[in-house]
Length: 274
Image 1 (cartoon, rainbow, N blue to C red):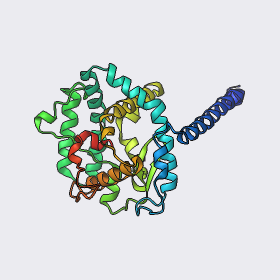
Image 2: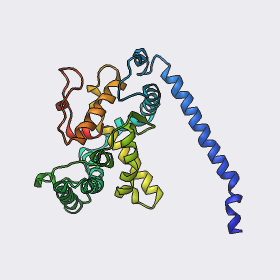
Image 3: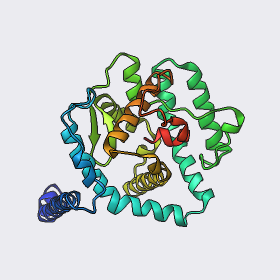
Image 4: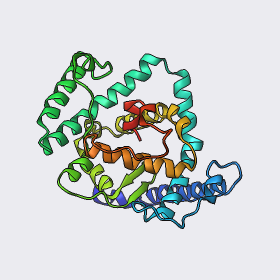
């Protein structure tokens, strides 16, 4: 009977599958209705002309559609939760949660630094991870920065760029947000390198993933006040310039926006989250 157990549960699996498909369809229709309403923060952006195609964004029409989808999900789900998190969470727990997840990301950072033969970054990143994982209680406290082990980030998208891979077109991923073809490909190795996704128990894995997403969104609430004009264009240009700076280890001329804009308005950790 064991070999036929899957078929015995097939009606239940099909029912769950149908519910998921129906939920996605309803969610999409609601998003479209919201995007077309006057209350949508995207409504003003429809007036933006797409006649001039950004050289890095040939898929702008599709990207804007995905941007609206992400904006809808954020408006109704993630943003309210993030506001509640910032309101209710004591600062020490909020900062500690951010530190914990940033400490886990040091593992792929060290690995990608090694792939790029950035041996100084390997030493600094390894020391930072060891110090924060032990004296910092699994990374909850950032003791390494005070000892000169500054936070740095390296990912597989940067590793691909190090070996000559072009960024490819800009793209907006469902729920994940801004990316490029190269960076989207780089997500897969980074997931396998991250200790977070080595957790075997699904409930714990999904719980930690949700917590990381909420903490990240809460940290970006203050950054929203700096967005001006067309939100899609602002976020796209900020992301592309930030990624260019990361790939070039900061040696990029700041040509983004007008003379009044400066990345000095952002905190370093907030820039890494864009």
